[in-house]
Image (cartoon, rainbow, N blue to C red; front, top):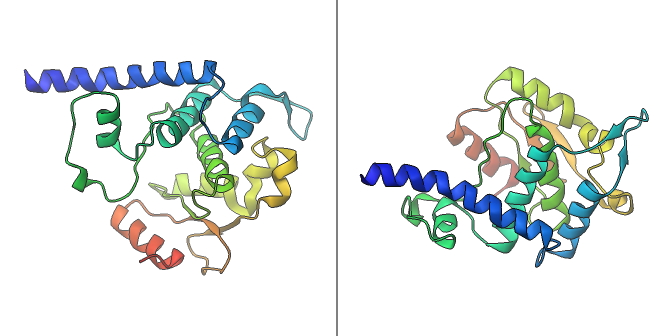
Length: 210
């Protein structure tokens, strides 16, 4: 029975969170930072056109994902599943000591636009000064190559409407690959790592974290 209740809780949690995020959207993203409000308005309320003249619009799945991330971080101020369950009155899944770093996860279908959500999260974090260092972990070389195609030289940030025009001059992000030497500026990194211990070691080494 406990296991059954736990499964029901895990099903009710995303539905409860989805309803809260939708209400927050309808209220105009109340209590979000001004920079966050500008980004959300730019992404989802303004018309966009790519360089070739093609109209562009973010997908619903992408919007829900980035809104949920922001809502959890800025409004609920939770950093992991334990804190999220506690904030929403759900059974607690694990002890807090099992969470070393802030941890958010999204389940998105193949082809729903995960890479774009990653880029949106980078832009949101960067302009809010939450962090200017980013480590992207690829499970295999195929995915690494795809990420490299989008992120190396900052291609994705130039091709798509991710940054409001008035902010573009303030976006200085060095993108380096797994085999590149670290450079002193703030980078977004693309290591081809699937082992989380190796990824953590790389992050500590490249970002000089203690």
